[in-house]
Image (cartoon, rainbow, N blue to C red):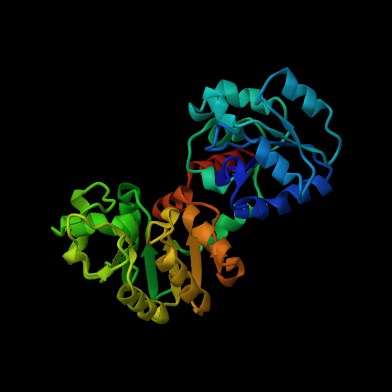
Length: 357
């Protein structure tokens, strides 16, 4: 089973287990069915590997751990599994064949199992061996959470109107397609975070020490659209709140301001569906006020609300608002790609296998 164990950690200590908790039902279903489960996954913290995650997972459901991905040690551990037993293998990306989508590596993984289950929607935008090649070699299925992600996000390919889109974070180049896709169907698209700084810079504003991404030609086109909404005021590092057009060379934008939040409140009150992805401030540096206030507003809304993105998940968990929205996606980049393209490589791999069956 391809599981999402890429949890945010600091010094090997898990900071947010939301993704892990969401995958437990599939683990328990397979265990009760008597399956012997080989858990494969990756982590962006290779210095610690998956051992701390496996240890943490053990608090909820019993799993073993093998510090290898393939080889005699893994085969020995798998052969000793009892019905309903589970073992977590080491970080898939320690083998170069994973990210290179090596069919040979996929064959090595497939040789240990009878069935493949993808329960890692958040990584299914990657054309990696465990996502797209492994399903070719075994009877393959989507996990319970994977299906839930697909079902809820698919609704937002054609969202209920009036539809309001709130987009924050960084990496404008990956989010331009999403902005373009939703402009025709949204009554407004609010752009915050480092994304907004690129728009301000294109408008000719002094950005000082603010984080500014790539200045893409598409920004000029988008700025002409009256549906694009940028923060009317921003908070800077000194603690002041000012208009973005009044920044000095020494200033740094860290969050949206109260006027921008008031405007967002009006937009949210008019919406029947809202999609929110990415923080509107530098959350990982302690500037989460704007993002937290938006989430509090959305939690009180009667609209259909879908959220996603790693930092957004962290704030939702901090505020204990997980159950206040229509759906909270475990995905970040995969969510954005699915909403922009309508599918993912991991989804297509499962569909191809189904069609061949």
